[in-house]
Length: 206
Image (cartoon, rainbow, N blue to C red):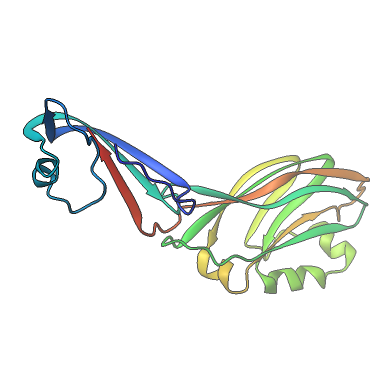
């Protein structure tokens, strides 16, 4: 197999198949093909070697500067104390290299007492901020997503990539509840998406 080293290529994939390949007959001072677009029989003949065509098992390795499968980016790690009648918010805005119209945001959080989970567009968030405390107690919409009231959230929410890149979203963890208690919130927020795949290098071996 040809050797290749380039720190720009950080992802790889492989494929195993069966097909025709040139096999060296006898001994030969060279055993590797130094690059693409080479006339293999002529190359080996230049070293005084002979080859024959036969079917064999192929290992194909693709190196890329980007993973063609799902990629996860960490938006935030949450470790906050939250007083009663308060909320924490997280602006989320990314211009992702992807052909997909939608991506998934994954919210995994736990709290020591119930909180509410919202995902807002900026206009919706501004409206939420304008509410009086009594209005916010029973508020559920307008919101892009309302996750309810709980001490545990393990939630996937579909985001529009255009909205995400332009004005973005606001994730809100709210303690504006009647009879709210002091609470600790822990967890993480990630985005999962399939990126576009730029040029790849293929290395083959039999």
